[in-house]
Amino acid sequence: MSLSGELPYQRVLLKLSGEALAGDSGAGIDPEEAAYIAQRVREVYDLGVQIAIVIGAGNLWRGEPAAKLGMDRSTADHMGMIATVMNGLALQDAIERLGIGTRVQTAVEMNSIAEPYIRLRAIRHMEKGRVVILTGGIGSPYFTTDSAAALRASEIHADVIVKATKVDGVYSADPMRNPEARRYSRLDYQQVLDQQLRVMDTTAFTLCQENAMPIVVLDFWNPQDLVKALSGDASVGTLISG
Image 1 (cartoon, rainbow, N blue to C red):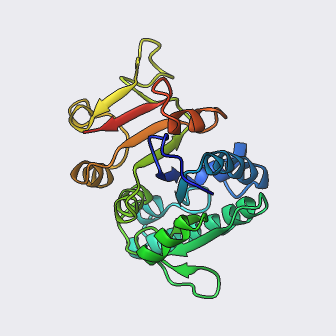
Image 2 (tube, rainbow, N blue to C red):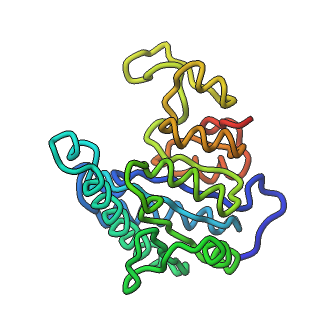
């Protein structure tokens, strides 16, 4: 794989929710959904872009609701971190079946099944043309995988975070409830804060703002949108930057 100097982004971090692997059921791991994600990753890989992925665990476990029901929050969050590793392994299998070398790294050490997260090793894997799946959150409770995405993107010097959603960008209101809602093609960080637009949790978004990390929000389930956005098509998704 060789990088193209014509592309606006050379290294991207793709943020996926755990539900992306679940399919219509909303829970568990659907191999067909894993294959769909892998195909989208391959299309980006074929552009010559270096790829890291952070995936959530909402399809398997949610720590915050469990904590509200009385479970110790740290215990609940650690279970969620472990669940992200399960999702990462499923995604690794799907991507490798397309012939792309993939490594799973985890902030929660599981040496027999995944590498420990080491920043320079992750960068080196990408430089060698491998996809790196970063799991285990940041290794500490009370932080979301959005925060993990924001932190890891800064650590590996990604050019952009792509937030994969089921909506084709950021809207002025919920487009499902308000037909008058308009999609923004571009926003700056302060506009997102002033308008209280839900892009990421506050900790994650502040980290992006402080490190000038651009965010592209797009519809991952519209097959062409990811490649278009990473090829510089401003008509796709919403770009949030300084």
